[in-house]
Amino acid sequence: MTSSSAADSTAPTTPEAAEVVAGASSSAAETLAAAVRSADDDHAFVDVIDTREAYLAAVDAIAAGTGPISVDAERASGYRYSQRAYLIQVFRRGSGVFLFDPPALGTMSELGEAIRDEEWIFHAASQDLACLREVGMDPTRIFDTELGARLAGFARVGLGAVVEELLGIHLAKEHSAADWSTRPLPQSWLVYAALDVELLVDLRDAMYAVLEEQEKVEIAEEEFQATLEREAKPPRQEPWRRTTGLSTLRGQRALGLVRDLWEARDEYAREVDTAPGRLLPDSSIIAAVRENPATKRELGALKSFVGRASRSELARWWDALERGRASSDLPSLRGPSTDTLPPPRSWADRAPEADARYKAARPRMQHMSDAMSIPVENLLTPDHLRRVAWDAPAVVDVAHISEALRQAGAREWQISATAPTITQAFVEAHQSLADGGPAAS
Image (cartoon, rainbow, N blue to C red; front, side, top):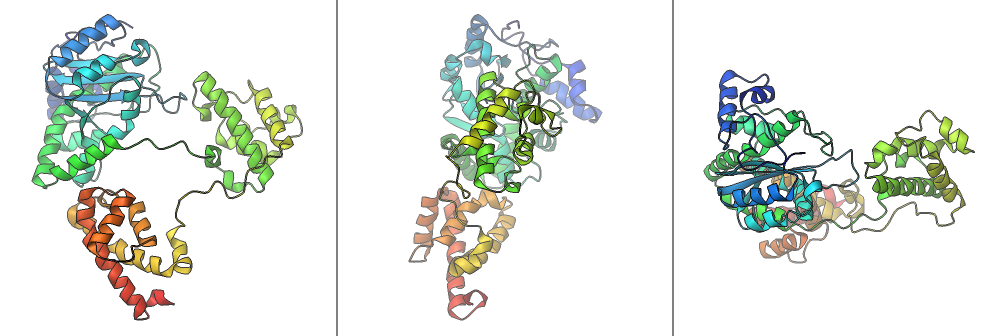
């Protein structure tokens, strides 16, 4: 692809803008056209920066801009094995919009360092931070318009919905699930990608005003920081156990066959950088184990054994089945031990006191969620409530419940908001049991 400077990296105006506002009112289209023209240039063509020379010039241009920086990344989930960024978009007032090709550029640490301490604006930052860090872009301060919309009680929090509600602009999202590893990228996709970041700065300002009006700015800032500091989850033990349809099989041998097929698929998917499910769907793995073909020919003849690599790599899948049949290292039926709590539906019999605490606290959390116009899962992570209810402190008062929530991972604003209510619920649950209430039996 060709490279571009700050002057020729802007989004198109009216012709392409009309495409993304299909179905919108004329006033919304005019608003969008004005927003697109707020970039430095009126060229209709959106270019992609894929050379070091053009990239370094763009870094200087972005550093010379003013205000926060909106950032987005496009991956190829469902197409590629990796979760790397295949396109990174950056917009800053006074600089314009820039679209970068990370596979061609390699590290983008110079840009990361130049803007590191500025506020970066995202929509759903948790989806993009990992792939940005892979190329050397790691912010210290963020504003997340998707998370802000949740905290503000918006019914819909997708970018298109929030842009339409706060800016009065219709933003089509038809390329959101595209294969962004495609080269060259179609111009209509690039217009879509450019608009995502061009509108984010104005969206951030509008969202801040909403949060300020609702007195939720400090809550939002704490949530943004928590998103930024959240550690990556450790690799899942025995990830093959997430194979769709696994619960329909019985016996350790069947589980071992699924494991060996899954691992063979994962190894090949990594090798060719293709999403595993495109090579061999989970349904094909389950079908192969259930049908138990006696020969490689029989495996290839199974109509339910599909996928783009189901026949081209038939020898690979047959070898995996043969290994599984010969293996004496069979997986357990229950899976690896974890610190996962038993499902609350089983608590009444297994732990009646915990069950009473949980049932007393849940409706109170929902009531508080409704009163604050914050989704209950954002008010307090459901697992945090379950853990505190399951293993309540010996002394049930606000201080001890607060510390228990803190140890579970709750943020300070969540603790301040919910600890008194949870404490009251637990005390009343204990009193109900002592008085011979329903849970006492």
